[in-house]
Length: 140
Image (tube, rainbow, N blue to C red):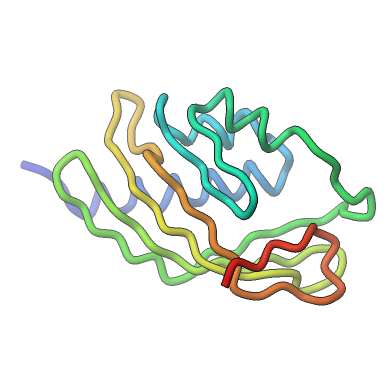
């Protein structure tokens, strides 16, 4: 019999692993949070599969003034249906500039042999500080 509490806990762990690895620049570990055909959609880009996600997030320039990044995830709503799940959560990002940007994650998840993974993660940015050190990303 499925254990809904254990599934939700494992999904919350996946959300945290994505965030912790991204904040620490461990892009391969972040990409490993995706299923083999998983998709990451974020402002201005989309990549499918862990290798492509790693390349997409490793390419391009990053403002050298960014030395501190922390994503804070709040209010995750998780609905589990067998070996599939959906999650929606808010995020707020702090950087060297202070409060930097915030938005939502809309996730489709799948249970794999390695545990829960993102089948699709859509990132939407609702607000971005004028002094942000990140490229302009507001999508709403």
